[in-house]
Image 1: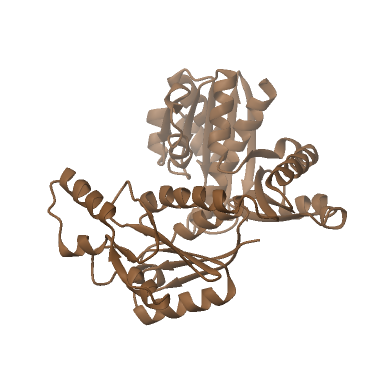
Image 2 (image 1 turned 90 degrees about the horizontal axis):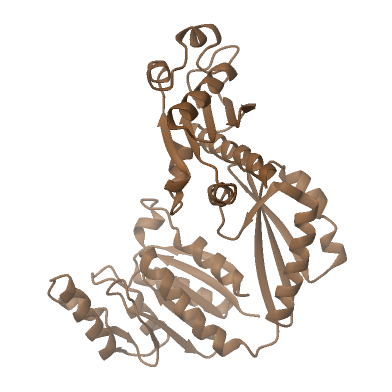
Amino acid sequence: MTTAEIITIGTEIVTGQIIDTNAPYIARILNEKGIQVLFQTSVGDNKELIKSAMKIAMERVGLIITTGGLGPTANDMTRKTVSDVFNVPLVSDKGSYTHIQKYLGSLHVNISDGHKKQSMIPEGAYVIRNDNGTATGFALRQSNSEIVCLPGVPREMQPMLNKYLEIYNSQHKSEEGCRLTRSLHTFGISEPAIDARLKGYAGREEQIKTMTLVHDGIVTVNITATVKTRESAIKLLDRIERDIRKQLGLAVFGMGDETLESAVAMLLKKCNKTIAVAESCTGGLVSDKFTNIPGISEYFLEGIVAYSNKAKVDILGVSDELIQKHGAVSEHVAIAMAEGVKGRSSADIGVGITGIAGPTGATKDKPVGLVYIVVIVDGNIEAKKCRFRGSRIDVKNYSANTALNMVRLKLMQML
């Protein structure tokens, strides 16, 4: 079974100026393809440090994937470092040079010496074309090590990784041993509760391993099957997935890339229902999640951020007396917000969210993290009082996901 290490190159990553999104993406894709990622390394734009990271990786894994350092500037050192580590010269690839000329020509930019450098690859390497930029990717194999060098820009890197993996799969499909991972996402059930229900897998089947991960209230169950062939792995994962879904029931909302909002969008379409959302403490986060879904405008009619009391009164029609009597953070106001946005938009479903995200704004009776969420469907009101812990951002994320899950469960009842 192939083992891999991911090396992300760039001083901006090491110093925390940007967040590395490439490594998580690559790790997930490799694991899905049965390639076991053992290490992730980040290194700055320093030739000796990059060389050291590559040499260490060569000693402990069979496949190295790097991102970054393939640009046109002096700081971009990946191709030269690979040339030195593998002791092969850099040569110009004519196809890459022609592509760079055409790409820059379409942008009315003249080709520079730096851009010419981007067509250079180690001799004997396989070229990975870049349809979205000028950085040429390449894969080079020597002895027991293979290194794949990709650009750091995600929109360039991701399709190039997929191109490489098509080649990898065709070269390795006859090899024995396959390791595939499948992810199931849940909400509304705790990690310890899931762990207790899945504890038996390790003893029953050595070919199966499960692991849970938690973020923003979502618990993801990673199921890994290790068997001889890909077909056997898929069949085994299908069976285990059915078993886990049976045990966890409606808590499972999706798998792989599916999100809570995409699950809700699919159910809105199935049930032919429309929705509108009134948000206070979440600041439009639920609406933002919805608008990440293509075609959602057919079902998501309106999102209102009524942050101040005045906005709640003027826009949503919440009674000022109601706010004075119960406070803006109360079940009564959350209901009025949901009713107000549902009525003004003529949506089938109305959602109201109000709470205290912190770190200030708390009182003796209303602590930080107190959030009221209301979902109204066909005159039926479901209200939930929550107490979330963590930072201001944590409270917002937990609140938004809880609201989406409440809507999801309501829609599930309509199927």
